[in-house]
Length: 206
Image 1 (cartoon, one colour):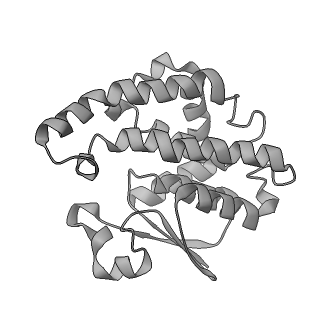
Image 2: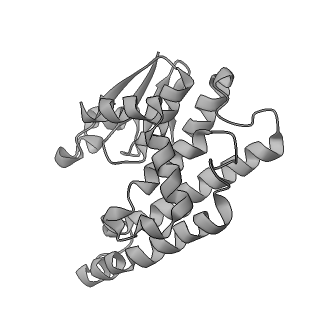
């Protein structure tokens, strides 16, 4: 049985959706960031990074969303959540997920995690002011060059779609008008019609 540690509103939603889409047996544990539970001694024993998501497997602990998504897709190949029989296509999926992780998520994090990069309040204010521009640029690139449609990889749904959907949910709060991104907007609507996504959204609210 897999166990996913998550917090609502975080990138952990992508792995949660992937587990549901895969039909994997799993349980979840919600962390309360308001009381800094992610840095509690109990949780740091599981994930010393003090972040989510964390996936506990029979072989050990996995962290970092791209790694977890690949693991889920490879562990449950019958769900066809990645092009596992084509090394080049799988690498393209990994490239997309890595961009979301290393660039898009980092741009978003400058809004509330400025202390990771600076110490002055003026720096935090400047970082926050840049969010609509940087996130807008990231999603304009996704809209124009990366999202094939209707799904990330074209006609075939993949774990990349769960990840893109998760970060798309941040756009309103980041000052980016999704109406200017018709392909991304259509992708979000398509994701929200999927039973697995509806199931996970309900689980995260519980």
